[in-house]
Image 1 (cartoon, rainbow, N blue to C red):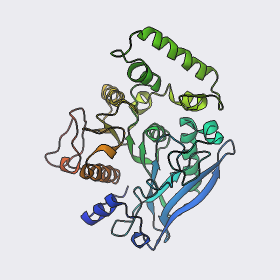
Image 2: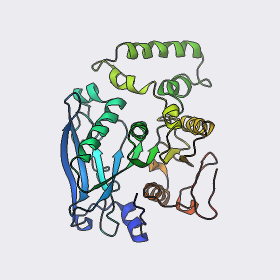
Image 3: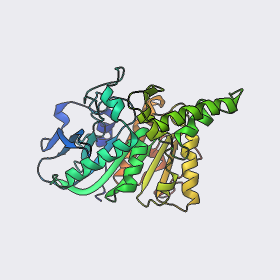
Length: 342
């Protein structure tokens, strides 16, 4: 894997995410659109930034979370996009969700096609299908895959890491992983022990809902705003077992204050499970004061986190002064002199 260094000017440009055409490379192709058929013949739309001159580069795959929002929506389309003053050393891939237009933003109703086809499993296989397609088509790709993923995307990215040996590094953000989502509902959301008068009845009601979902994962009938088909792919997912045997370097990132979206206790449980398995292929950054995303952090800490995640993917050693404040639950490896280690 090629190891790169970002200059101070590059970092400023990246944190600003300037969308002006003047900052784009002349020898790069941006947002090239492609389509490949899924195994069930659904069309999978994808978008690529890549060199136009045949330069061989790794491929950075961005995988966002849940919701029927497009990959080219305004706040997403420039994430980690290459621009002038920054090293043009990787291509960028985003795979669209089913039934979603590329610029669809938050606040609009999801389509029937989205509800019928959005699942963790389909998102994993859709990404693998696009990657396999590009292996036969992309003459600019050196074969290495880098993954940046968040929330539902973290679950999806985790499975791709396990299934695809060409992944060389991955950031897995805000996905929990130690507890299943069913356990999130039981212990943190619907029936938390400290806030539930009749917890046994609450758990029993949840169990009935879960059984209905698993017995009839309908693509039409909904539960909690999404189809049963979607929930069926989420509720039993636990990442501890597949990641225990993983030896690809992964960076797990979670917010200390994340609770309504993905309880931080789930990420801590995953870390404990990996430690118990003797796995040392992971690093864990638990960001102090952060919620499900970094939007509630101070602007300088937002920039530090985004830059440090990219730097980690590109093989840089990241010093503690380059990170936002972390909690004592963090497990930090491969830091330069004076760095904290587990």
